[in-house]
Length: 150
Image 1: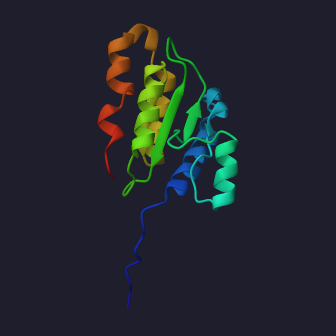
Image 2: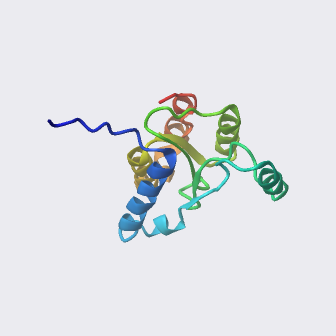
């Protein structure tokens, strides 16, 4: 008898690891990808460790990833990465994304590593100076994405 194997939805951690594997493979084409990094704000911690991290400056809601590569008048790209299903943007994350956008950063909520890879590639290849503020506001505000649930 053949049994169907139930495949679960990858975790956010697995999606992020897949994204960094993609970035490593694409670094020859886009050298800027070597600057992409994870901001280790999330995760489960004991009370003592959580207190120590708060004292060190960890802040709730800071996006998961940052690409410190300016494009035109945009200072860099922040990404909040969610799993394909079940991810939700918290109030604190929403506040951070809006505040960063208002400071001139591109921000985007991505569901899965492939969505994030597409967003990063578009960020790196778009001529933002020529496209102007309207396209920047429309695409990078990501307001429609900020509260979506997977």
